Image 1: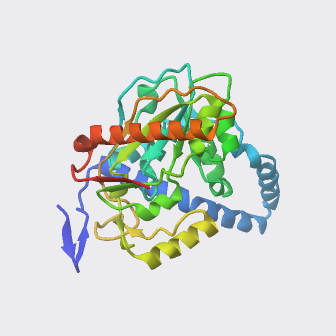
Image 2: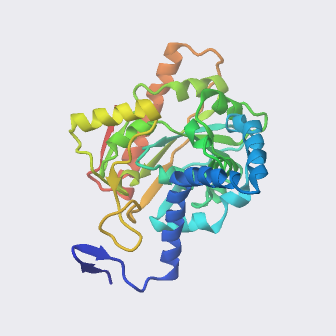
Length: 339
Protein backbone atom coordinates (compact mmCIF):
# COMPACT_ATOMS: atom_id res chain seq x y z
CA UNK A 1 0.00 0.00 0.00
CA UNK A 2 1.17 3.59 -0.62
CA UNK A 3 2.31 5.51 2.44
CA UNK A 4 2.54 9.23 3.20
CA UNK A 5 5.38 11.24 4.69
CA UNK A 6 5.70 15.03 4.93
CA UNK A 7 2.57 15.39 2.82
CA UNK A 8 4.00 13.27 -0.01
CA UNK A 9 2.34 10.01 -1.03
CA UNK A 10 5.06 7.45 -1.74
CA UNK A 11 4.74 4.30 -3.83
CA UNK A 12 4.70 0.96 -1.97
CA UNK A 13 8.08 -0.67 -1.44
CA UNK A 14 6.83 -3.90 -2.95
CA UNK A 15 5.53 -3.39 -6.47
CA UNK A 16 5.03 -6.15 -9.08
CA UNK A 17 7.85 -6.33 -11.62
CA UNK A 18 5.40 -5.71 -14.46
CA UNK A 19 4.44 -2.31 -13.03
CA UNK A 20 8.10 -1.41 -12.62
CA UNK A 21 8.67 -2.26 -16.28
CA UNK A 22 5.75 -0.03 -17.24
CA UNK A 23 7.12 2.90 -15.25
CA UNK A 24 10.58 2.35 -16.75
CA UNK A 25 9.08 2.37 -20.27
CA UNK A 26 7.34 5.70 -19.66
CA UNK A 27 10.51 7.12 -18.12
CA UNK A 28 12.42 6.07 -21.25
CA UNK A 29 9.79 7.76 -23.44
CA UNK A 30 10.18 10.99 -21.48
CA UNK A 31 13.98 10.78 -21.59
CA UNK A 32 14.04 9.92 -25.28
CA UNK A 33 11.88 12.82 -26.38
CA UNK A 34 13.31 15.50 -24.12
CA UNK A 35 16.88 14.52 -23.25
CA UNK A 36 18.34 12.21 -25.92
CA UNK A 37 19.08 15.03 -28.37
CA UNK A 38 20.77 17.41 -25.89
CA UNK A 39 22.70 14.55 -24.25
CA UNK A 40 23.90 13.33 -27.66
CA UNK A 41 25.11 16.82 -28.55
CA UNK A 42 27.04 16.98 -25.26
CA UNK A 43 28.50 13.54 -25.92
CA UNK A 44 29.63 14.54 -29.43
CA UNK A 45 31.27 17.68 -28.04
CA UNK A 46 33.09 15.59 -25.45
CA UNK A 47 34.09 13.01 -28.05
CA UNK A 48 35.59 15.78 -30.16
CA UNK A 49 38.11 16.47 -27.38
CA UNK A 50 39.31 12.86 -27.34
CA UNK A 51 41.36 10.75 -29.72
CA UNK A 52 38.08 9.50 -31.21
CA UNK A 53 37.26 12.95 -32.63
CA UNK A 54 37.15 11.52 -36.15
CA UNK A 55 33.89 9.73 -35.20
CA UNK A 56 32.30 13.14 -34.76
CA UNK A 57 33.24 14.05 -38.33
CA UNK A 58 31.80 10.79 -39.60
CA UNK A 59 28.49 11.42 -37.85
CA UNK A 60 28.36 15.02 -39.13
CA UNK A 61 28.90 13.79 -42.69
CA UNK A 62 26.06 11.30 -42.23
CA UNK A 63 23.84 13.94 -40.57
CA UNK A 64 24.28 16.37 -43.48
CA UNK A 65 23.86 13.65 -46.11
CA UNK A 66 20.73 12.26 -44.44
CA UNK A 67 19.25 15.54 -43.22
CA UNK A 68 16.27 15.69 -45.60
CA UNK A 69 15.21 12.07 -45.07
CA UNK A 70 12.50 13.08 -42.61
CA UNK A 71 10.63 14.65 -45.51
CA UNK A 72 10.72 11.83 -48.04
CA UNK A 73 12.03 8.48 -46.87
CA UNK A 74 10.91 4.86 -46.73
CA UNK A 75 13.06 4.09 -43.72
CA UNK A 76 11.22 1.98 -41.18
CA UNK A 77 11.99 -0.79 -38.69
CA UNK A 78 9.19 -3.14 -37.69
CA UNK A 79 11.60 -4.69 -35.18
CA UNK A 80 11.93 -1.35 -33.38
CA UNK A 81 8.19 -0.67 -33.52
CA UNK A 82 7.39 -4.08 -32.01
CA UNK A 83 9.81 -4.05 -29.08
CA UNK A 84 8.23 -5.19 -25.80
CA UNK A 85 9.03 -1.85 -24.19
CA UNK A 86 6.15 -0.31 -26.14
CA UNK A 87 3.72 -2.91 -24.79
CA UNK A 88 4.82 -1.93 -21.28
CA UNK A 89 4.43 1.73 -22.22
CA UNK A 90 0.85 1.23 -23.39
CA UNK A 91 -0.04 -0.92 -20.38
CA UNK A 92 1.15 1.78 -17.97
CA UNK A 93 -1.94 3.94 -18.52
CA UNK A 94 -3.32 1.62 -20.07
CA UNK A 95 -3.90 2.68 -23.69
CA UNK A 96 -6.43 0.65 -25.66
CA UNK A 97 -7.02 0.83 -29.43
CA UNK A 98 -10.64 0.21 -30.48
CA UNK A 99 -11.47 -0.77 -34.05
CA UNK A 100 -14.98 0.16 -35.21
CA UNK A 101 -14.77 -0.62 -38.94
CA UNK A 102 -12.70 -2.49 -41.48
CA UNK A 103 -10.02 -0.51 -43.31
CA UNK A 104 -9.18 -1.81 -46.77
CA UNK A 105 -5.52 -2.08 -47.80
CA UNK A 106 -6.54 -1.02 -51.32
CA UNK A 107 -6.53 2.68 -50.38
CA UNK A 108 -4.41 5.23 -48.56
CA UNK A 109 -5.65 7.04 -45.47
CA UNK A 110 -5.39 10.15 -43.34
CA UNK A 111 -5.95 9.25 -39.69
CA UNK A 112 -7.13 12.57 -38.22
CA UNK A 113 -6.26 12.35 -34.53
CA UNK A 114 -7.88 14.24 -31.64
CA UNK A 115 -7.02 15.66 -29.16
CA UNK A 116 -3.34 16.60 -28.98
CA UNK A 117 -3.21 16.46 -25.18
CA UNK A 118 0.04 17.34 -23.43
CA UNK A 119 2.36 14.78 -25.04
CA UNK A 120 0.14 12.88 -27.50
CA UNK A 121 1.05 9.65 -25.74
CA UNK A 122 -1.81 7.65 -27.27
CA UNK A 123 -0.98 8.78 -30.81
CA UNK A 124 2.65 7.83 -30.18
CA UNK A 125 1.71 4.39 -28.85
CA UNK A 126 -0.83 3.71 -31.60
CA UNK A 127 1.01 4.95 -34.68
CA UNK A 128 4.75 5.15 -33.91
CA UNK A 129 4.89 1.81 -32.13
CA UNK A 130 2.93 -1.43 -32.12
CA UNK A 131 2.31 -1.15 -28.38
CA UNK A 132 -1.47 -1.28 -28.83
CA UNK A 133 -1.30 -4.06 -31.47
CA UNK A 134 -2.16 -1.84 -34.43
CA UNK A 135 -0.65 -4.41 -36.82
CA UNK A 136 -3.00 -7.10 -35.51
CA UNK A 137 -6.10 -4.94 -35.93
CA UNK A 138 -5.06 -3.48 -39.28
CA UNK A 139 -2.51 -6.00 -40.64
CA UNK A 140 -2.09 -4.47 -44.10
CA UNK A 141 -1.98 -0.79 -43.10
CA UNK A 142 1.36 0.99 -42.62
CA UNK A 143 0.96 4.01 -40.28
CA UNK A 144 3.23 7.06 -40.14
CA UNK A 145 2.88 9.61 -37.33
CA UNK A 146 3.50 13.09 -38.71
CA UNK A 147 5.29 15.46 -36.35
CA UNK A 148 7.05 18.83 -36.12
CA UNK A 149 10.28 19.33 -38.04
CA UNK A 150 12.29 20.26 -34.94
CA UNK A 151 11.97 16.65 -33.77
CA UNK A 152 14.33 15.66 -36.59
CA UNK A 153 17.08 18.13 -35.70
CA UNK A 154 18.38 16.34 -32.61
CA UNK A 155 21.14 13.76 -33.26
CA UNK A 156 20.28 10.12 -32.46
CA UNK A 157 16.71 11.10 -31.57
CA UNK A 158 16.06 11.74 -35.27
CA UNK A 159 17.31 8.28 -36.22
CA UNK A 160 15.11 6.60 -33.61
CA UNK A 161 11.89 8.30 -34.65
CA UNK A 162 12.66 7.88 -38.37
CA UNK A 163 12.98 4.13 -37.90
CA UNK A 164 9.71 4.25 -35.92
CA UNK A 165 7.96 5.58 -39.01
CA UNK A 166 7.62 9.24 -38.02
CA UNK A 167 7.83 11.86 -40.76
CA UNK A 168 7.54 15.63 -41.15
CA UNK A 169 4.03 17.05 -40.87
CA UNK A 170 4.66 19.20 -43.96
CA UNK A 171 2.29 18.97 -46.93
CA UNK A 172 5.05 17.63 -49.20
CA UNK A 173 5.86 14.77 -46.81
CA UNK A 174 2.22 13.84 -46.43
CA UNK A 175 1.68 13.87 -50.20
CA UNK A 176 4.79 11.76 -50.74
CA UNK A 177 3.32 8.98 -48.59
CA UNK A 178 -0.23 9.23 -49.89
CA UNK A 179 0.82 9.21 -53.54
CA UNK A 180 2.83 6.00 -53.34
CA UNK A 181 1.85 3.40 -55.92
CA UNK A 182 1.53 0.67 -53.32
CA UNK A 183 -1.57 1.20 -51.19
CA UNK A 184 -2.24 0.62 -47.51
CA UNK A 185 -0.32 3.71 -46.34
CA UNK A 186 -1.69 5.90 -43.57
CA UNK A 187 -0.54 9.23 -42.20
CA UNK A 188 -1.61 10.04 -38.65
CA UNK A 189 -1.98 13.79 -38.18
CA UNK A 190 -2.79 15.43 -34.85
CA UNK A 191 -5.13 18.03 -36.33
CA UNK A 192 -5.19 20.54 -33.47
CA UNK A 193 -1.41 20.67 -33.26
CA UNK A 194 0.60 22.12 -30.40
CA UNK A 195 -1.93 24.90 -29.77
CA UNK A 196 -4.35 22.33 -28.37
CA UNK A 197 -1.99 21.84 -25.43
CA UNK A 198 -3.37 25.11 -24.06
CA UNK A 199 -6.83 23.53 -23.88
CA UNK A 200 -5.79 20.15 -22.46
CA UNK A 201 -8.17 20.15 -19.51
CA UNK A 202 -9.31 16.95 -17.76
CA UNK A 203 -12.88 15.86 -18.56
CA UNK A 204 -13.04 18.28 -21.48
CA UNK A 205 -12.25 17.84 -25.16
CA UNK A 206 -11.64 21.24 -26.74
CA UNK A 207 -10.59 20.70 -30.35
CA UNK A 208 -9.14 23.15 -32.85
CA UNK A 209 -10.75 22.18 -36.14
CA UNK A 210 -12.89 24.93 -37.68
CA UNK A 211 -9.99 26.58 -39.53
CA UNK A 212 -7.89 23.46 -39.99
CA UNK A 213 -8.58 22.53 -43.60
CA UNK A 214 -5.13 21.65 -44.91
CA UNK A 215 -5.68 17.95 -44.25
CA UNK A 216 -9.00 18.16 -46.09
CA UNK A 217 -7.29 19.67 -49.14
CA UNK A 218 -4.63 16.93 -49.08
CA UNK A 219 -7.30 14.23 -48.80
CA UNK A 220 -9.07 15.54 -51.91
CA UNK A 221 -5.86 16.05 -53.90
CA UNK A 222 -4.62 12.51 -53.20
CA UNK A 223 -7.96 10.71 -52.92
CA UNK A 224 -7.02 9.43 -49.45
CA UNK A 225 -9.90 8.39 -47.20
CA UNK A 226 -10.36 10.33 -43.96
CA UNK A 227 -10.49 8.37 -40.71
CA UNK A 228 -11.57 10.24 -37.55
CA UNK A 229 -9.66 9.14 -34.44
CA UNK A 230 -10.57 10.16 -30.89
CA UNK A 231 -8.48 9.36 -27.81
CA UNK A 232 -10.72 9.51 -24.75
CA UNK A 233 -8.62 10.30 -21.67
CA UNK A 234 -5.65 11.88 -23.48
CA UNK A 235 -6.28 15.16 -21.66
CA UNK A 236 -6.54 13.47 -18.25
CA UNK A 237 -3.01 12.11 -17.69
CA UNK A 238 -1.64 15.38 -16.27
CA UNK A 239 -3.04 18.12 -14.09
CA UNK A 240 -2.79 21.60 -15.66
CA UNK A 241 -1.17 24.51 -13.85
CA UNK A 242 -2.64 27.06 -16.27
CA UNK A 243 -6.01 28.35 -15.15
CA UNK A 244 -8.64 27.79 -17.80
CA UNK A 245 -9.62 31.47 -18.00
CA UNK A 246 -6.16 32.99 -17.51
CA UNK A 247 -5.75 35.44 -20.41
CA UNK A 248 -2.15 36.37 -19.53
CA UNK A 249 -0.92 32.78 -19.19
CA UNK A 250 -2.43 31.83 -22.55
CA UNK A 251 -0.88 34.86 -24.27
CA UNK A 252 2.55 33.90 -22.92
CA UNK A 253 2.05 30.36 -24.19
CA UNK A 254 0.90 31.56 -27.62
CA UNK A 255 4.04 33.71 -27.88
CA UNK A 256 6.16 30.68 -26.98
CA UNK A 257 4.41 28.61 -29.67
CA UNK A 258 5.07 31.26 -32.32
CA UNK A 259 8.74 31.34 -31.32
CA UNK A 260 9.44 27.61 -30.91
CA UNK A 261 6.35 25.92 -32.52
CA UNK A 262 5.52 24.18 -29.21
CA UNK A 263 4.30 25.47 -25.81
CA UNK A 264 5.94 25.48 -22.40
CA UNK A 265 5.16 22.20 -20.59
CA UNK A 266 3.27 23.81 -17.70
CA UNK A 267 1.66 20.83 -15.99
CA UNK A 268 2.40 18.33 -13.27
CA UNK A 269 2.02 14.62 -12.83
CA UNK A 270 3.68 12.11 -10.53
CA UNK A 271 7.23 11.08 -9.75
CA UNK A 272 9.05 7.77 -10.12
CA UNK A 273 8.77 6.77 -6.46
CA UNK A 274 5.92 9.02 -5.29
CA UNK A 275 2.49 10.02 -6.55
CA UNK A 276 2.21 13.65 -5.39
CA UNK A 277 4.20 15.63 -7.95
CA UNK A 278 6.55 15.16 -10.88
CA UNK A 279 6.70 15.02 -14.67
CA UNK A 280 5.59 11.45 -15.30
CA UNK A 281 1.95 11.07 -16.39
CA UNK A 282 -0.61 9.62 -14.01
CA UNK A 283 -1.84 6.08 -14.62
CA UNK A 284 -5.16 6.99 -16.20
CA UNK A 285 -6.88 4.98 -18.90
CA UNK A 286 -6.84 6.21 -22.51
CA UNK A 287 -9.09 4.63 -25.13
CA UNK A 288 -8.45 5.46 -28.78
CA UNK A 289 -11.47 4.89 -31.02
CA UNK A 290 -10.75 4.61 -34.75
CA UNK A 291 -13.81 5.56 -36.76
CA UNK A 292 -15.18 4.49 -40.12
CA UNK A 293 -13.28 5.75 -43.19
CA UNK A 294 -14.84 8.60 -45.15
CA UNK A 295 -14.29 7.96 -48.84
CA UNK A 296 -12.98 10.92 -50.82
CA UNK A 297 -13.19 11.53 -54.57
CA UNK A 298 -9.80 12.60 -55.90
CA UNK A 299 -9.52 16.07 -57.42
CA UNK A 300 -6.11 17.63 -58.04
CA UNK A 301 -7.56 21.15 -57.97
CA UNK A 302 -10.30 21.23 -55.32
CA UNK A 303 -12.43 24.36 -55.07
CA UNK A 304 -13.22 26.16 -51.83
CA UNK A 305 -16.69 24.61 -51.89
CA UNK A 306 -15.20 21.12 -52.31
CA UNK A 307 -13.00 21.65 -49.27
CA UNK A 308 -15.76 23.22 -47.17
CA UNK A 309 -18.24 20.46 -48.00
CA UNK A 310 -15.84 17.67 -47.03
CA UNK A 311 -14.76 19.58 -43.94
CA UNK A 312 -18.39 19.86 -42.84
CA UNK A 313 -18.94 16.15 -43.44
CA UNK A 314 -15.83 15.29 -41.44
CA UNK A 315 -16.99 17.63 -38.66
CA UNK A 316 -20.31 15.77 -38.45
CA UNK A 317 -18.67 12.32 -38.47
CA UNK A 318 -16.29 13.37 -35.69
CA UNK A 319 -19.14 14.54 -33.46
CA UNK A 320 -21.04 11.34 -34.21
CA UNK A 321 -18.02 9.23 -33.24
CA UNK A 322 -17.63 11.17 -29.99
CA UNK A 323 -21.29 10.86 -29.01
CA UNK A 324 -21.43 7.13 -29.84
CA UNK A 325 -18.49 6.26 -27.59
CA UNK A 326 -18.38 8.98 -24.93
CA UNK A 327 -20.46 7.14 -22.34
CA UNK A 328 -18.46 3.93 -22.71
CA UNK A 329 -14.92 5.29 -22.70
CA UNK A 330 -15.06 8.52 -20.70
CA UNK A 331 -16.97 10.40 -18.07
CA UNK A 332 -20.52 10.87 -19.34
CA UNK A 333 -20.17 14.57 -18.45
CA UNK A 334 -17.16 15.03 -20.76
CA UNK A 335 -17.70 18.12 -22.88
CA UNK A 336 -16.83 18.36 -26.57
CA UNK A 337 -16.14 21.85 -27.89
CA UNK A 338 -14.90 22.48 -31.42
CA UNK A 339 -13.25 25.78 -32.24
